[in-house]
Length: 68
Image (cartoon, rainbow, N blue to C red; front, side, top):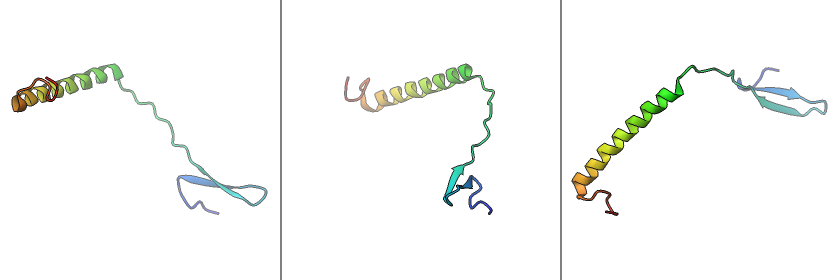
């Protein structure tokens, strides 16, 4: 019997019951320098936050709108 889904395979037990099990994907090792990438993303988010802070101050006149 051919499988109905390509991502699963069917096993028939001795009692005639059928079970479908998922096919596990192959694991891949990704060669990325996470420390350098984290520092870059952190810097980019800090720049976005700084620009948002300046924009909020320019629009409302408050350092943190609703608090100060």
